[in-house]
Length: 447
Image 1: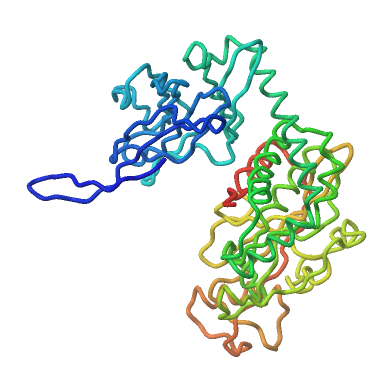
Image 2 (image 1 turned 180 degrees about the vertical axis):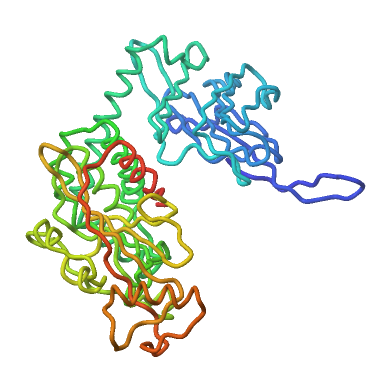
């Protein structure tokens, strides 16, 4: 695709625009097969997929219209436009933009935003051959398939072609295994490239490594959804690979030393994949705490907590209410997941006097499956720290809450923030609701 400068006239005034031009070139003969002028208003093309036999698929994001796939035949004819819509914007009455046939593909998972419809994150697009016919396949993040029959120029009905969809799924599983294995093989090169990019965003990465890094997030998603046990060995060997991003963080409530936590996107996805296929994680950190302070994001003051702690189960079982975050984290390490009342209002209730936060430390039982130790923290919102006096930490929290609600001054405090304390320790086995919570909170790859 190229752009040409042009002018349009509206309300008596002329405006410069860039008109897109699409063309297909045969790399063997060096001949241009077809060329076409696009519409500067609506042709916000984001991806092109070209098959060796000349079929072309253009994905339009649809910022000002609707998301769609345009299938162009080898001779340059508009064969089929597939409009993609969600529950909010089904576009049932909107006419097709291009010529030729068109169909609608509706799914409630398609999210409508002011920046267009979002539906392609972690999707996999490719051409697929089966029983002598050619197809274009999109596997969505939620494991639904949009399949275009390029011979019949129609969207394939999911309910009527079970053998075809089983073959497509089997190829996805094979591809995911290959990507995970290839990531293991290039682990050293990937780590070096990720570290270099974290220090210098302008640092160039080879096309192969960039594509592999994009693909591995989709591959790990497929591993989790289809529980591909054959990947277990390779997943275990990838645990030390790290991609912490200092611009991606979450706030932490027990603040004594913990100002925020930086998330490792890759390790979080890998961790869930290992639990899904029954491989026990070693305990590498999925998040790194940043020390409280007015540090610039480019120069974080990271807290060095232990990783891969031996007999972590016994240490967790020995925790007692009243302990502080420092006492726990510097012995056991960072949790795998943090919940607050945005995630779970039952465990972390909303309160006028306290902030609640739950730290989940994960494990794997061969009989029960994935489980977590849930550590619930409670911290007064307005109280001041007890600096000595005559009541314990637990009594101090209750007393401070009463003092704050009555707008009184505490005789034992010197103006510092009240500490958080451990309220309860609970071990629970993951159910589908918790699995869904953890899956939904996996950040989208922005590779």
